[in-house]
Image (cartoon, rainbow, N blue to C red; front, side):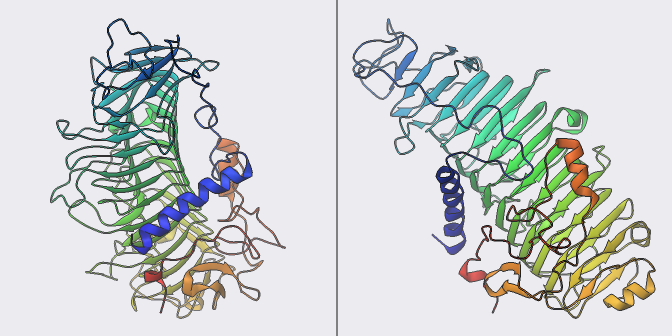
Length: 550
């Protein structure tokens, strides 16, 4: 296991241990707790399980004695071969061995659970998982899939292996391993009719090796694919890697954008996917919070961004994510007239070690950067910490505005790379920058080809750069990417609050006036600049050894 992959595993384990030791699961910042899918506990199975027991299904197709004939429920001594296609409220299906039965249309699984009597399909423990090689389509209400291993076999080119289909309301997938074949795999949540999928939770799973990451074409097999007519979906605390598409892609399509909304993606680790770690296209109210995303490089189907969006989604929030070792940190693509979205927000992210794989061009706002904003209309870039990057915040856009406040940007490594670069005069004229901390030499390009120092920028553009300062940010330990502020930093009590926090609260009723470690802001007389409040003692992600700054 290399250093980055090892770090990802440790991050996932640390998150789960932290929640477990606290005695209760807590949601990522800015994400509400789901009403179903996290805390449900399976009823105890019969013990000893010697006779057929209504509501409890023992399924082991790999057992030579298994039969469905006259065997409604099954026992360990006489298992069922298959899962019943329709399961009533309160059912518990205990699955064993190799299960190669396909459950695609017209043999999809239909679950009829209730809040008081949910349905479980499960392996006996996280360490004893049945292996499922068939293609599953599942729909219904109040059900939990747990302790399973989906291991894709051939015959399903281009398909996800596990599909949550409409109509579905309140479902959970947890403690499960999903890995695919070279031509397909992964999880999809989507409606192909006029009904919806709502209240699904994908929690604490490992999703990996779906499709071929070395494909010479745009294969587009995503770890998790979210489609049209999906709302109130939680993707939380998973590890996702080596997908031939994005680790997670949200895409309702042009005509159905408004039907896919309130998608919560939190505290996942996503790395080494062929495209990006997380991406959204047409959707509304998408929150990416406290994810760890790294090791994405350009290829024949992507530019190598850790995360981003395109086609004008509406109200997309990147909150408190940790991103490193990519060609772009957050990258946005062309709006292309396909979506109706106008608002995007980038708050409290910690972005480092963002460097191009070749062909850097400092003369264009399309160049590699920690935050690259070709797409979007109104972009709010607030309280981020950016360090060891080709460039800081850049945009080649010509419409809308970029609002930049309270950021710390340091160690811009390209000699012609800019801390801030808005290429087009029309965009610069509508945009604002204030209360930033930049190391020396500061380079700002604001709608012209001229490179300004911070003082020169303030002189040339009246009203811009208010409260901004030059100097060493005094990070705690930059060599290992601990980017909290030390005592004496110019960023302490030198920042300012921003209306984005109230906007989020007004829309969703959740307070996100916090730092990247979850500490309430401000802690002192005023906000501190960057992603961390001074003295923050929350978990700080260390850097893998091959990223340590020399």
